[in-house]
Amino acid sequence: MIETQELRDRLTGIFEESGWLGELFERAGSLAPHHPYYIGAGCLVQTVWNELTGRPPLYGISDIDIVYFDSTDLSYEAENKVVERGKRLFAKLPFPVDIKNQARVHLWYPERFGVGLTPYVSLEAAIDSWPTTATSLGVRKEADGIWRIYAPFGLEDLFRLIVRPNKTLVTESTYYAKAEKWRSRWPELTVLPWRT
Image 1 (cartoon, helix red, strand yellow):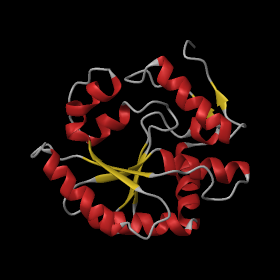
Image 2: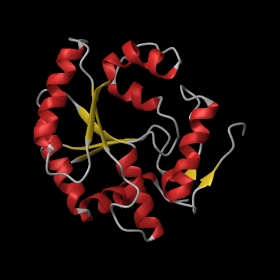
Image 3: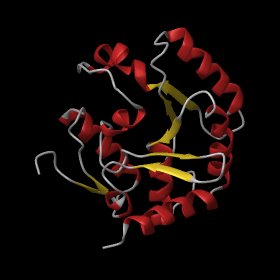
Image 4: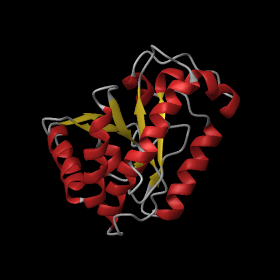
C-alpha cells in the first residue's frame, strides 16, 4: 500500500505538470484573502484519471468547480459578486468556472435535487458530503506555494480508479448516473455497487 504522503506528492506532481491547472491555481489564489477556497472534485479527479489512463490532459473535463465558505452573508447577491469576479478572473481558462458559497447550499439544494440538507458548518464539511470517495477532494495552493489538500476518504480510490459511493448526501440513482457517465469516458474505472 502506498503511503498517504506519497499519493499527495504524486497528486501535486500531476497538477504542477499541467499548464492550465497551474494557471487555475495561480489565479484562484487571488480569492484567498477574502475567502478560504478549494478547487474541487471534477477537473482535478479527471486530470488524474487522464494521466493514469494515457489520455490527453483536457479529455472529459467540462467545467471547473471552486468552492468557498462565507456564512456572514448568505444572499444570492453576495455570492454573485464572487461569481462575477471569477468570470473576469478565469476568462482565459479552457473551461467555465462554477463558483459556489458552500455556506448557502442548503438554501437551494432541496428544491434542485429533492434532498434536504442541513447547513454546512465549514468548507470541509461540504466536501465530506460530495458523492464519491474519489471526488471528495478539494485542493488549493497557498500564497507561500504550499499545497493544501483536503481528501476526507484519502486518495487511494482516486489512484486505483475506483468509484465508490459516499452515502452522506447522494442518492443511489444520482450516484449511478454520475458513475456511468464517468465510466463512458474512462472505461477503466471500477464502479462499486451502492450496496457494498
